[in-house]
Image (cartoon, rainbow, N blue to C red; front, side, top):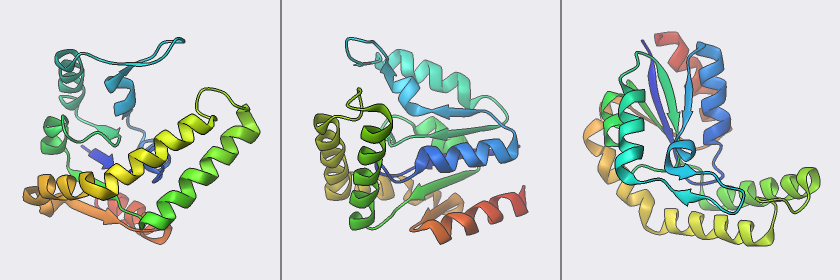
Length: 170
């Protein structure tokens, strides 16, 4: 049995790490964005809170999973059931650099598509500022009681060590 909850600020590499972990363990991956948002060509909208909690409740009853996303305010049931909570916690400057690099990659590959716009870049920069300004503190306060299953990763070297540690104990 392996249940992993991966979180951190936008642009920190959550999706990339969670995908690697899920593939290596051959277990299902559940991005919180797909639960939080209802996708529409005309623009995404937030899913009804009761519906998203119901969806998450079904997922966490599975024996194995990797759940990833920046959302932590409504994911208590996932953090409680997780065997391991992984927080990607890069320094703010590194987070900004990753967001900028991702924006440039999106522009080069997809043009000014939905996420390759200056508006989207500014939105991600605002989310990052919000995270480092107050949400990071809220997250660590919330998971303080789960410190026995908490792993905090600050850089790529830490991610490699994390991957080895998770699979050494699995």
